[in-house]
Image (cartoon, rainbow, N blue to C red):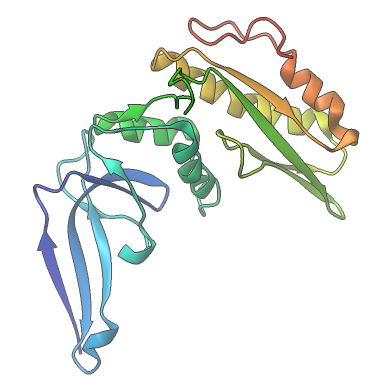
Length: 220
C-alpha cells in the first residue's frame, strides 16, 4: 500500500526549475510504499507566486531531477540562465526565455552580466556560436555549450528564412530581457558551417532599436 506524506517548507527561499517553470519550493510530497520504503518518491511542491496562493506539484519530475536555480532575490548570469532555457525548450510544452525570466522576476530575482577575471570590468559583448545539423528532411540549429545565451531552432532542411525567423524571435526575447534589466551588451553570432554564413550575416547586421543594448549598428 502506498501512502502520501507532505513536508511543508514555508520559509524556504530556494528557487527550483521543474516542468518548464522556475518557482520557489514550499514543500515536498513523498510517496511511500509500505512494502518497499526505500523506493520512496519525492516531488517538489511549488509556490503559485503572484498568480495563485496555493502550492502545486511541478510536473512529473522528482526532486532529484529538480535543479536549484538560485535563492529568491539572488541574481544569476546569462550562462546559468541559459541552462534552464535549454531545458525549457525541451519540455513537452516548450517554454521560452521570456517566460522563464518573468518567473525569476516574480520571485525577486533577475540577471546580471559577468565580469572579466583580470580587471573586474563587466563583459558587454557575447559571441554565440551556432551549429547547424541537416537531417533527411528536418534540420536543427542550436548554440554550443560555450555560448552564454541559448538558441535552438528546428526547420525544414534548406529553409534559411525559417531558421532565421526562429533565431530572430529568440534574439528579440533576450533583447527585451536585457532592456528590462537595463543591461547594455551586444550579441554577435558565428558559425563554422559555411552553408549558413548568410544566416549568420543577417543576424549580425539585423538592426534592433533598443534603449540599452548596442544592437542597432551592425555587429562585427
